[in-house]
Length: 77
Image (cartoon, rainbow, N blue to C red):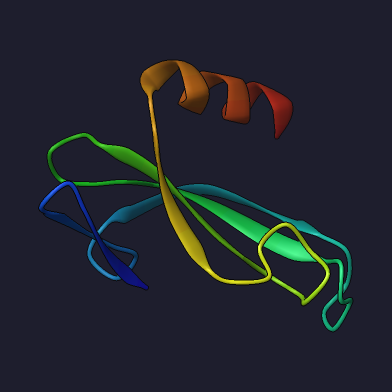
């Protein structure tokens, strides 16, 4: 997925995947997947995608601060 945020492109195909998590089983309407990425210039973002009843019913890219990255990593060890 590719998204323009603040005049900069964030792309899951060109960024480096750091970690990910899956909630639920494939096909669950409330299941979802989150992937944490880092760009070449050090910006972190989450890519989220999921079923129709999940928090990612539409795929998203959301920028993360260093603090948010650490919290996410601590919660998803």
